[in-house]
Length: 127
Image (cartoon, rainbow, N blue to C red; front, side, top):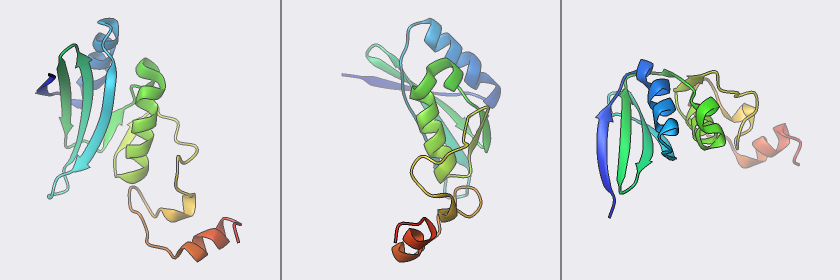
């Protein structure tokens, strides 16, 4: 049975932590994020440590460095999802194309607009 260890880290520790985990042969399991009720962003990096999941938590940062250069798509994909859906971005991450939402569905960072599907189809030439 896996156990979870949660550790708070700073923005400046994100890359060195990822580099050490990779050097130690640890897998990046997941990167996930949420906003606290007061609007504080929280980003969690989960690494496999055998039966232990080490969860490194960064609080209060809207901009973090990407670790996609260390963990390739295992990091790039969740970082892009977080960037697309929330007011959190990753320095150095290629966000030139959206993953799953058309450009005209978003207004600002991480703000999803409610738009009738007929309008979205029309704007994207899918009529």
